[in-house]
Amino acid sequence: MKLFVITSRIPYPLEKGDKLRIFHQLKELSKTHQIYLCSLQLPFSKENQKAKTALSAICEEVHFIKLSVLQIGLSLLKSLFNKRPFQTALFTDDKARKKVAALIKSSQPNHIYCQLTRVAEYVRYEGTPKTIDYMDAFSKGMERRKEKSGFLFKWLYHWEAQKQKAYEMEAFDAFDNHTIITSEDQKHIDHPKRSAISIIPNGVNEDYFKPQSARPKKYDLVFVGNLAYPPNADAAQFLCKKILPIIQEKYPEVKVLLAGVNPTQSIKRLQSKSVEVSGWLEDIRTAYASAKICIAPMRMGTGLQNKLLEAMAMEIPCVTTTLANRALEAPENAICVGNTEQELAKACLELIFNPEGRKRLARNGKHFVSESYAWSKSTAKLEELLLK
Image (cartoon, rainbow, N blue to C red; front, side, top):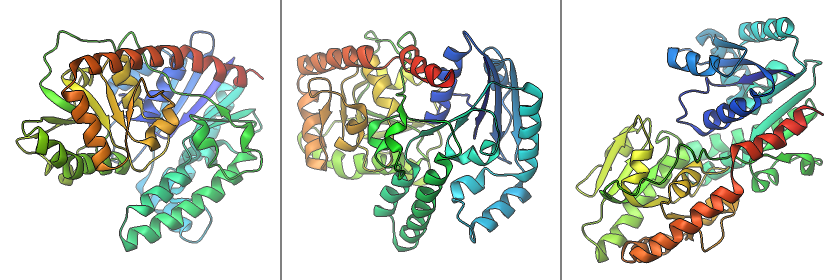
């Protein structure tokens, strides 16, 4: 089968969830199908030759289309007066749309796979059979951001949430198949046929994320993620300002690592004798392996937390919130769950002072991930849809 794939970002390097998901799906699908990849590129981003090389190894053709500042500006301006969400407007460029149409015409695909509603405008009117990966319920994510924002941003997030909810419903009818990462996100797509959305979970590469028991445990806690992404930034602030002080009452020498790309100035200001902000790491496994516990105190956002899958695959015991575990669906013997700063601090302290408990939780977590999350299994479900 010839499969045309369109993404809103170049899916390499794998520092963000959408990139990680599509890269591993393409890697699996390329074993039996021809992949024609078209990735949009925001105006001020730089083309990465490493990305071109890595993607060319698994795709028949790779095309990066750089968007125009002027075209995006016009699109965003129009979205003030129409129903198009700002998330979609940001990635919609009329000139780029013509290029995408030409690529589809030249490749003559049997199927089109569209990652995220951000790029639905580029392919929704194509006659070729199409599948859209919602990935997460963006509208619900905006609603949760609204709850944590000040007055002005609260209003903006509310407006975007309503526009996104309507667009998720509208785009539904333009596609033959629909996928999403979790059943929890499926519930938040406001369409009468949402039960038809296929659950295609993420996976974890256990050949890469393997235990590194020999590495010294320099930190007690590690939080990993794109630190410019609001749900991650909120979790990092929550960890350092609310959870950490409670832990320090019982364990003053506690050490925390915040590891991930794009730390904002507010995140960098969290640096202290107890907290290290590493920024981008060439090998994120070193962050997981250097800590006794991985904590993901998520209070907003949607979808599955890849950080938990990766840490559990490496036999790092994990602490998280009900919000994050609702998507993960890990049993209580495989993960510690709390919601308030007191509950999360208590879970961390119990693990810090109980090495055997950490080992037991880590082993159970690894077993759970091995049984439930594999790219080969999840992509096989996706392939069935594409071949219908």
